[in-house]
Picture (cartoon, rainbow, N blue to C red):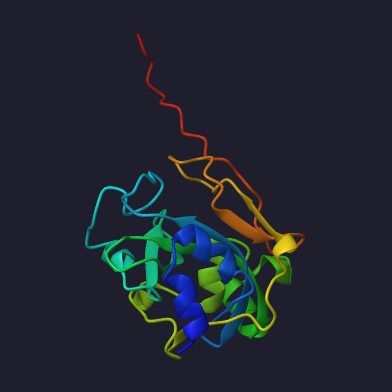
Length: 206
């Protein structure tokens, strides 16, 4: 168990998130060094959080204890993974948005099946990151600090504070401008920022 990471994850999501940059996530024979993350609080005023409206069977693991995986399925085709954080009973998590594949590159390439080989794209985005690592719904509720099949490890070298950037979160319908997305400045695996634009109704309004 990493006491360093456990102490970090015991804090609020917006504090834990930047501390996860540079950490390594290992699963399915692949290791990714995290370059971009996004914090989400629970019911306390964060409309972008999956726990904003309270506990459900889907988000139950978000209510702690910290250090567990919250994996969800989105758009009917992709898995995304969060690391649960904060005090037990107060839902919070950090979405793992992107990273660099530092071990198991061939395995990640085989899973991603890119048309144009570009290792920067292997885990650039939350769905791609899970695909590269072979993470699916079976990882839901996995304890990440216990050396199991999905393991979160401290960074080999801490990311200097001057290289940690923050800004609005990506693709959320509420809390658009909350600056809880954190990334490593200049890292080529960081995803492009796209503000969520609600789809317009095709109905003719009187």
